[in-house]
Length: 205
Image (cartoon, rainbow, N blue to C red; front, top):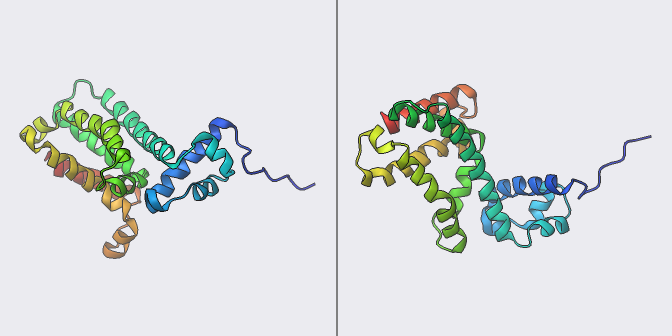
């Protein structure tokens, strides 16, 4: 007897919510908040739209859950990295964090696209993103000793923050362009390692 196909909407609640959020991250990164639809996200997650609406009554809440998920995973990885270097010099701590950040962005290219889609807007959603996630990350960089490691003044930190964000993520967000333009596949492990080293040298020196 042939196996019975699993019905749409069959995942348990926790699994369904996780599937929805991961599918939302992909959809928002690829199409932006305005173009992505909850129906499309439900299709990507292979669940009924009614189940999506049960977990997330509107698209704004779903977008915020996607942002929470991205920054939560990023924070866990960076915190784990810093916990292994409690007594390291500021330069080594910052260099290690930068390399870890680049490696993580390479594994999550949607992160850069997700931020860029919202980055030039000013609305309640994007203000929430800045206040909830970006300000703590910026404070983290300040407290990690980035200015000291780079031998720069604190008023140059905004430039360093955005230079790091762009340098770390753009090559992976537009990997197809990179392959065609340079012949380098930035998704290969050797290329990721080389890029992590390059960005760390660029920011820390």
